[in-house]
Length: 213
Image (cartoon, rainbow, N blue to C red; front, side, top):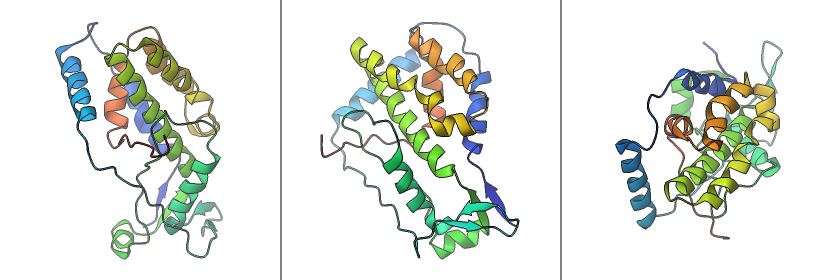
């Protein structure tokens, strides 16, 4: 059976978080504990992870599926991500580098497990945009938890651009809901839903220092 991965899948899953209503206000014990854990983790030296994006065999990233649609060859998805990063219009937070997690579709064991999959062209762009969003959410929450108002304002300036990114405009359903549910409350001083979104949708995000900074 063929499986199809669409660029809108990640957005559809994320939209479910918008229906959650968080009761109460102010900083909870859990949030204070999380802030303390984040501070302790930042203070501990850890080996820097690295990102290796595998080149596309043959160089041709796209293919025509039997249905006549154009998709990304699974073994070329890394190359598509690398190109999406090179073309991405916005910067990461200072001191952060790209560390996008991808699946090694060139591994025969992975292909055998997943079967014949079809990756919609555009998944690479939403993947990169999602990493960028998580990086700036991490930057914002770090600034919020440390009382750095200038850092909060700087990070929020980029977070507010997310729904205007080309990939978000093309693939995200109801981006205004994201703005109203996540960005607007944080901008007004209540990052509870932004924190919830970050914990759920950015669980694989790893802050990695950029050696050039």
